[in-house]
Structure formats: C-alpha cells, structure tokens
Length: 391
Image 1 (cartoon, rainbow, N blue to C red):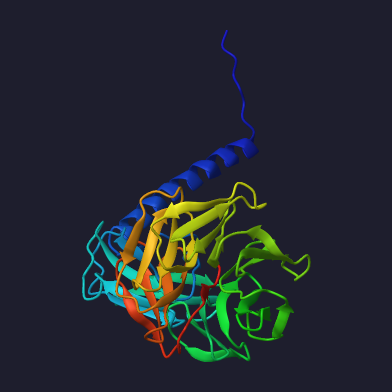
Image 2: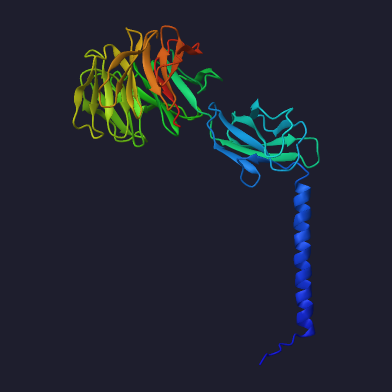
C-alpha cells in the first residue's frame, strides 16, 4: 500500500524559494564569470593581504625583491604604467612591465630595492595602472632598519674616528683626548680603547658620550684589545690582561705570554699575536691550554681579528693581511697585499677592515679577499686600532 506524504503550504513555499535562490546564484555566477572574462584583473606576488614586508635590513646593505604582476582576467590590460610612491628608501631598479600591454594569463616583473638610510620603519606603494578602471593593482611595501652600524679607528694624536659601515659620514674626531690610542674594540653599548703611553683603557658610550679616559688603569704598554659578552681583554707588554665589562676584577696578567700586540676572542678561544715570534697564540677562555705557536708564519703580526671561519692578522712590515683557518691550517701570510704599514684588522659578516698607517687611510675588502679598497676611508691620520659595530 502506498503512503501519501502531504506537504504543508509553508514547506512548499520554502522549497520554491530555495530553488529560486539557487537559480539566481547560478545566474549571478555565470554573469560574474562572463564579466571577468571581459576585463583585466591584475595582481602582485609575492604578497600577504596586499602587502610585502622586507623585514629588518641593515643600513648600507640594500635588499632587492622581484615582484611579479599577473593578469588573471580575460582581456589585455592596455599599456601599463608602474609607479612607486612613499619612502625614498624604496627604488625601482628593474621594470619589465611599463609600456607593456599584459594579456590574459600573462606576467611581467618589477624589482624594487629597499636601501634604508636611517633606523625605523617606512612604507611605500607599488602601483600598476593599465588605464582601464579595472586594470589597477596596488601593493604596500614595508621595510625596517636598526641603528646605523659604524667602523671606528684610533690615532696616536688622541682621537677616535668613526664612519658609517659603508664609508660615509666620516668624523675624524668622534672622540678626542684619547692620547697615544692604539687598539679599539666595541660591543653592543660601548667603545673601548687602549692608551699606550698612559697605560689606561678608555671607554665611552657608542654615541661618543660619557667618555672615561681612565676606565681601567695600570696596564703596561697596552696595544691591541678585544671584548666579548663578559670581559674586556688587552695585550700588555708580556701578558694578556682581562677585566669584567664594568671595569672590575682587573687582572693585568690573565695569560702570561712572550710579547703580544694584537688580541681577539670568540666563544671558544682567546687569540693573540706574538710580534717577535712570528706566531699566533691561542688559549681556552679560562686561560688554560695555552699554545704560543698555534699559527706559525705570521711574521711582523700586530693586530688581529677572528670570525666564524678564519683568523686574520696585519703584517706591518710586509704590508699584507694574513689569514688562516680557525684550526690553524691553510696559513696565507699574503691573503691581501698592497696595504701600507697596517696596524690592526677587524671583520664583520661581509668585509675585512684594516688601518693603513702609512697612507692615513682605512682599507676594506670582501671576506674572500676580493674588491680591495686601500682608501675606503681617507684622512685617518696614522690610524692604528680599528673596530666595527656588531651586527
């Protein structure tokens, strides 16, 4: 027996309305599809919610990004115009889109460089305009930079000089009164220097304020110096001295060695140059396991520096910068040539820096020894010590 299911008037109306809405949705989707097939639709990539963030970029180390413009619509864009408005820190350095009519499913590229000149966050807007109302695409560009990094040097006439890490804004008298200054070192808050004749370690804030010419006293003919996260180190006439970062717990004979000039430190070792022995010495952070001949063949070595891969030193009389692996191997006394009586050397993640006392200049080269510039900074009178800001 068949059972007849009756439907109420309200249920019938609901079904009718549902069918009507479904029909309208289909019609609307078809209409939108036909419209989209007839207009250009421009989009930028990469992007996140209409923006692209370059992140934090160091002043003097520009970063470039390729942005791809794609037409996802069904007709050509007409001739495009690319524009960039906002902070001048953003610059279009390559434009493959302007004056191009971008057809359906076609793409082109624009490269924008972010080169901050000051700390802080800045923005700009990258716009593609095809002169049709629908053919416009905007992308917000965001970039930030930290404090400007610097390179510092000392001169025996009593001045500490400073320049931007790319060689600009040279100040030959950033700090004055540092008589007979030799080695220089910096950490995240202070700059330190040794005064050879006075037997003192000086200190100042990184902005040059709160100068203390006698932060540590009673050193004996100090020359090179270094700093890490907990201590200051300096080369006395026959020892490596050490003190806490606040100047306390001074030990003028932390490591007794022959005749050190330069000193450098990393997380695993302390290093120093033995000028008259032609060697690089090394010891553990607590001063143990001392090896005065860790590297041989480093004749006339005065200043030195160390990074995650190599040891570097300044060969005063041979006018070279030497280099060896961190394990003491692959010694190259002439890694960089053409210096002029170099005293000290410093290093960051991109460059090696050294003082040319004979030319009164600061030299610089890439980490692989290429692109040597013996006059990266000029006017640094008889420059001795050198240091570069942390990254």
